[in-house]
Amino acid sequence: MALETTRLLIQTTDVVPLLLDLVTARFYTMAGVLATTGISSVDGIIDVLLDGAIDPGTQYIVRLYRFGYSFSSPSSIYVISPPPGAGNNFKAYGTTSSSIPSDSRLCRAQGYLRDAHGDAWQGKIRFSLLKPDIVDGAILSREITISADTYGYFLVDLFRTGEYTAMIEGASGDERNVFVPDQPTIPIADLLYPIVISVTYSPVAPLALTVGGTLEVTPTVLASDGRTLAGAASQDLSWSVDDATIAYLTIGSDILTLQGLKAGSTTLRATRLDDTITRIPDTLTGETAVINVT
Image 1 (cartoon, rainbow, N blue to C red):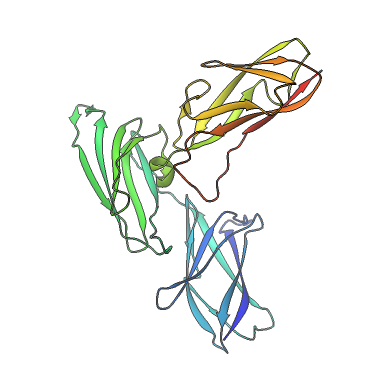
Image 2 (cartoon, rainbow, N blue to C red; image 1 turned 45 degrees about the horizontal axis):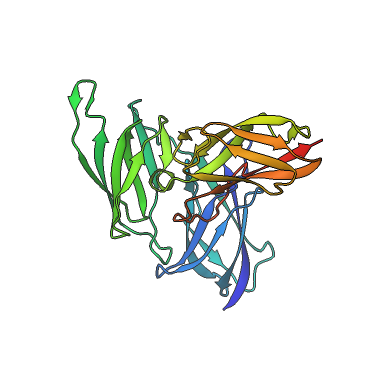
């Protein structure tokens, strides 16, 4: 056996196919052991190293995931060593999932549960409804327990704008407060473990002001569970200016006020206060804004 470069090209089934990025591919041995993992590039390509063998090769099970898509072929691949003339190259096809609840009052939370080794985990999540109490004249039950399937896939319909507590049985055991967005679907990870994901500014950056002048900046802060947080979201973000000799920052409940102190450029910076939730990859769009003082 030898390690061989194995390429997976992932595209849609459209007449003019689109290349799919951010697709997570997990390759398992036939014994169910995770061999390696890859994420597709903007070109829809995943390159990984897998042990191969002489023709017909070493067989691997392929599991693909991107929220909102379902995938067909290949469910398994054979990696040949030495590689054939065309290489160990394979294609996979994704279609947009139609997994949207028929009831417009519901939001479908879906995604995967994995154990500490990255394998599928048939865990359970228990939801307790806090509100609403009555919908369209119907009194609602309070407790819902949903189990993941053999692939770790999990799906539950919850009332839009509803509030729940949720606990993943067998995980930390901590109950989490859940706020369901007014939208058809949401990734289960974003619902259970919300973090600030985006900050935009009005006026838009770069922020311009004069020495001795002031500028009022209104931030809009979006969390991963679909909520727009109130005002400057000071309970979730800390605000600072990299060079306080160029611009002075005053933080209000809704508005950030900048005062120009001397000519130059610096940066307005937003930093998450809650570091208890770790995500990979972890990005905060708009965490910095350039300030130009003239």
